[in-house]
Image (cartoon, rainbow, N blue to C red; front, side, top):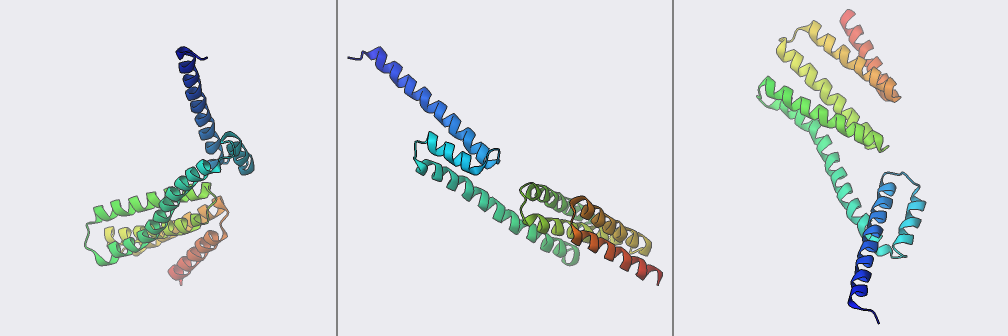
Length: 196
């Protein structure tokens, strides 16, 4: 017969065993999320440590996947809305130039952050957020320069050329042909317009 001390020790041992098992499961899930091990190995280890009980594993994956997918979908919508908001701020509002600069800066920083995030994840929305970001930067710089320098043509041409050079640089850095072509085409058209 077991006495009371043995029973308490047995319960503590079971609790410690469950804690260790939870730690191992969290670690395997972390490996799977961050692709530190192939997905098949992680699935095998998870089924081994959950003793074939995939219900717990599927509930965890559904929760993390649903929150992550909701966040990504909201980010898609927000990035696309930024371009619309930029056009509204430029053409349909009477906001001060300081506030416009602040809004455009925040938009460009958010687009840059999403570009980095999607580039690391090898996600196709990387291209959309990059295009939206450089379009916002282009529209904002042209608008601000034309407001601050009262439409001085030389300053405007310079800022457009700088945007084209930036597109070419990013295109070569990330090996994106559409940006290289856009930058070269923009620069050639600008130079042709200026001297002809």
